[in-house]
Length: 227
Ligand code: MN
Image (tube, protein in one colour):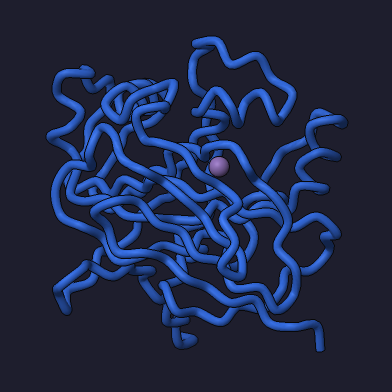
């Protein structure tokens, strides 16, 4: 028989450990902070959360030097609290949801905003706007459940571009997990990007992008200059 290809299991770092967290799936919540929903032209009421996905191998670690993505003139940053699940379930009750969490960290939901806008307008999928290569930088995970409140910020070349508070999430962490688990069975290794505060904006070739949340390891990635 022909030799089978070797497929690499995507993993992400755990703060203070040499162990690696295996990534199964990446789910993302859209518009989970009122100020960001408004800047995207939506009404930030408590409509049920909506979800999209990225491929598991979109995760890249802090310290990465990344190629600037193709096919975009409006490449943007979204700093987000990311949950890492240590156990799963379906139709999980809100009261039981926190028990699924292995750890949490700071991620950046990289977005080809122009492709997303075209997809929205045409009623087409977001995959190529959101799920491209290296589109999910993620810092080392902190074990346990994330704080309910705390600063979440993003800087580009040292300038603050996004600043919010975890307390301003429209859907709380347990509510996000519970709602997502009505659509799919969640499982160990799943990551959930929980939405971004306002201030999303462009990344240009050569930019250094840093994200941070109080109490977690920061994420920093650099985008290569155009060659
Ligand atoms: Mn996002």
